[in-house]
Every structure is written in C-alpha cells, then in structure tokens.
Length: 172
Image (cartoon, rainbow, N blue to C red; front, side):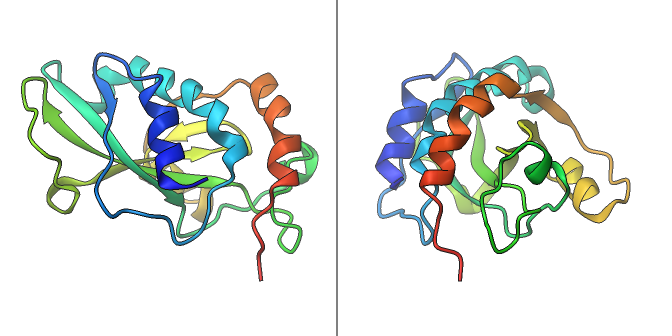
C-alpha cells in the first residue's frame, strides 16, 4: 500500500477525536500489505474508545504515518493461528507502528511530527492495539507496564489473513 492509500483508508473512518492528515513528501521505504486496509476501521474504533487513556478531553490525535515495527515480536502464535507473514521467520508477528500527534480540538494548524510524535503498535497477527511499553514487554519478556487499548476481533483477522499471505513482502 502506498501512503495515499493509508491516508484515504483512515480518513473514511475518522471519529470526533481521531483524525488523519497527510504530510507532504512522505512515503514508505517498505510497503505495508494493502490487505490490512479493512482492519484500519477496527483500529480507529479502538483508538476512539481508548480516548480517555490516549488524550485529554479537549484534545484529538492526528494520525499521519505507519511503518513496520523496528523490532519484531516472535512467538508461536503465527504458526498456531496460521498467520505466518514471513516464511523465513515464521514466528515473527506482523506488527506496525502507527504515528500520531496530539493537538487541542480547536487547533487546525499544520502538524509537526518532529516536535511531538507518539505512536501505538498494532499487532495484526493477534489483533492487539497497544502502546510501546506493552509491546516491549512482549518482546523482552520483562514487565515495562504499558497499555492494551483493545483487540481487533479474531474473526476479522481470520478473514483478512489469506489476502495478507498472498501479498507477502519480499523478505531477503
């Protein structure tokens, strides 16, 4: 999926406090599977439901980017659930970091991701939408705390995964 596909998919499911904006000249060095696009509606609903945890009452978040997580989570789940994304590393989860900034509800100025970028992690293998501390706890098997904002329903994931596997990124 290219950047405009991402922005377009998310803009169709914006909520009152969860918005999306494109940043000029932004692109993806590694393509994210287009097959995950239908799951963005689920992710946006989870973020909207977690608004009391994510941001203050008079704030909104503006999502502007997505990329594979820099460190991959590994477990037996991809094999057990038949959700193998990388055949060369079959225990690797398909996880992405979704970047956003917080702004006051009345602020309509351009976003500056360098100034105040934050992120949530979406694990498309098991459906978890989490903060980075929760994700690090899963990777390192140490307790860094963190928050589980919600789960994408397993049935939705199961419907999408055959298309994800057909679209596998070429891992070298």
